[in-house]
Amino acid sequence: MAKFKIVISDPETGESQFTEVEGPRAVPLIGKKTGETIDGSIVGSPGHKLKITGGSDKDGFPVRPSVHGGVRINAVLSGGVGFHSQTKGERRRKTLRGNVITEDIVQINMKIVEKPKKAQKPRKKKKPKVEEAKKGEAEGGESTEEASQTA
Image 1 (cartoon, rainbow, N blue to C red):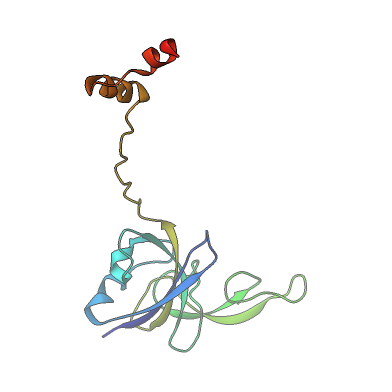
Image 2 (cartoon, one colour):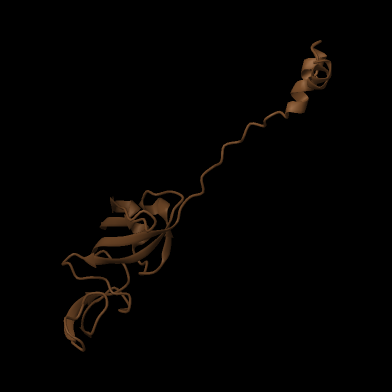
């Protein structure tokens, strides 16, 4: 069965969380592609929407969005995921993994796209001061208007 290490990043705070998913919980992730948005309940974050941003396979080769399928290839790169050139115009052959999540993938990187909406507590209504003055009259006391006139 598949076992994935999942790193969930929060762009708002800059923090990341690490979780492991294996067995039947990992099955919904197989076949997903880099760039797809999934429900957070799959990885233990209910209410969140998560976007798959990348990952790496069992030998450490990075997942590149432009390589289609779940295959491992050798490609000539001039920049981007998997290779950053030291000099202008440099190109190099690098081994990469395709953008589809298979059982060979070990780590999946995700970022939070949408957080759950917080339930708002019902507010207590404040009684206007006019009603409090009328309540005092009903109890036999003077109203604020009568008190100001007699004073």
